[in-house]
Image (cartoon, rainbow, N blue to C red; front, side):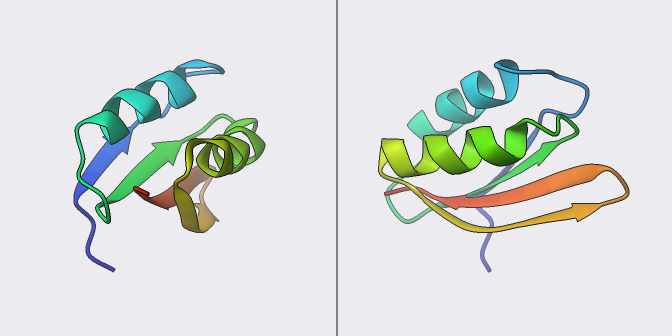
Length: 75
């Protein structure tokens, strides 16, 4: 997977991970992949729903030591 940009939202709570993700996605080109790091458990549902409603694709998400990693491809 070719990650274009990494966004660190660790320590932030809802809605900030979504707000920062949207701003970061606005700077990317179609097909680019954004890696988002978050510690807010709500981000799992929030980023999944946001990706669908925004026309982007959540390629994968994992959890490692309390850090959620999301890989979102810009639509």
